[in-house]
Amino acid sequence: MLGYKKVGILIVLCSVFLLAPPHAFAMHIMEGFLPANWAIFWMVLSLPFIVFGIRKIKRLAGEHMNIKMLLGLCGAFAFVLSSLKLPSVTGSCSHPTGVGLAAVLFGPAVSCVMALIVLLFQALLLAHGGLTTLGANVFSMGIAGPVVAYAVYKLMNRSGFSTGASVFAAAALSDLVTYIVTSLQLGLAFPAAEGGVIVSIIKFMGIFAVTQIPLALSEGFLTVIIFNLLLAYNKNDIKELGVLGGRI
Image 1 (cartoon, rainbow, N blue to C red):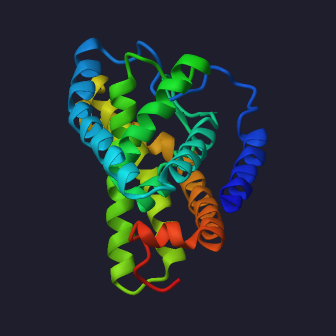
Image 2: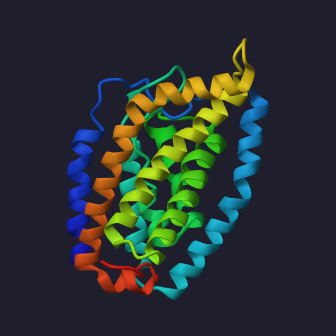
């Protein structure tokens, strides 16, 4: 319990810097920006993952007594990091995602529900993202990114890489994949007049890369710091989740 409080304090201190940018208009894919057909498509595609994630959280909460505190901490971490708003292209922005930590600890299904809650709060309280684009934002940040984070972490851990290196790669690549998928979503919705969808996707990816690559690396390092703090103070909880498999 004491360990969670210390990690929570660190996250709150980070939020002082992350939640004070002067541009209030920067966000995930913004409210009303996607055509209705694409907004509905991404919501329908995300729903099965959300339902499965809710069931998994219920199961984990029944199996592990202290899981709720860790879930809350991961949610706070994702909320703080993804609230950093750096304008990148019209209708969207670059920012860390923070979901890599939850994906490593609980798997992508739980991260999906966590991202849904974070995005819903941001849309309602911070005008960050939107309700009509919730499905698209959940799919990129809560499904695609965490799936890659989980797969990368497991693969590297089983291949003999240290836990720190595995967590770093998982968090950084999760961030990058989120924005590759966001570029795909924008490219599909707004194909270029010349070259169509492919040219549009490449254009969005090129613009995002300027800010997203440094942010992904920074998120990787910060996630390792938080993971190591959790490991130092709450190693038993981490072990119960079956996360540790390689060198520490």
